[in-house]
Image (cartoon, rainbow, N blue to C red; front, side, top):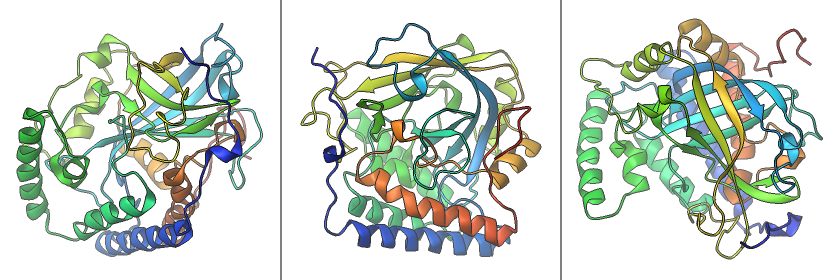
Length: 362
């Protein structure tokens, strides 16, 4: 196996039009926010608006990691409180019969290290999706996809449900001949799988101390793996996913493996194009930590009020040792800030970073 590539600033390449594209992304997300806040009288996230799981957890950094994995927050064994938010990607609060990709945001509380510029508090966020590769190779393509999603934001719910059913059929037909479409899935063609059984991926690359990596969360306990591939029946149940997660998280303790895939070849494992799948034969995922969640109600209104209204999750909340890399991550920075500022201002509810239990927030 080749040695891990060492991180340096020149692994990133900024396109000449990147600033303009990022400005257009912010404008498109603001359009979504203005539509949905007008509809609801309350501002929700511009993407991943609907939470389906709010779970208190603890991240265990494993002892005895090899030097290439003992980096950043993984440099020393220990335990950190954590918060998990499971969601789906649209910016409006749709009935769950509109099936779209699942997301999992992880906030690791109370980490040590030099902060990223503008990163408040003392936490590290990672954002995961239940697919190994991003739907677009660059911000310009992502912007086109986002505009497609934005055009569905203010449509009647019955139309979205019908569109989702048609797209799921098209996706199943495509999978039958050995392919899949990220665009179809984003627009409502994703299978309505149980989120607790899914494997999640950062899709984009991050600095990993001296190296570069992508991360993944893999269900490890039987309480999670029993749900892998399980389709949730949403008929007549607009909140079927959160109801299912709330109930199933009460049946036993849950454990995920937090895995790291180190970059070992910049040509075959590019930083700038997250639509390229990093080959696991070149660099397999290796478990560096375990995420533990005791049996609990997996979603409640009180938990959602706290997390959905008072917190944000951003790949730019964290430490320099896990700096987000590549154009898509750079394109997330300002739109994320705009979205959380819009929510805070519209709702009159400030966003803040939680502190470890027993300590005051900074």
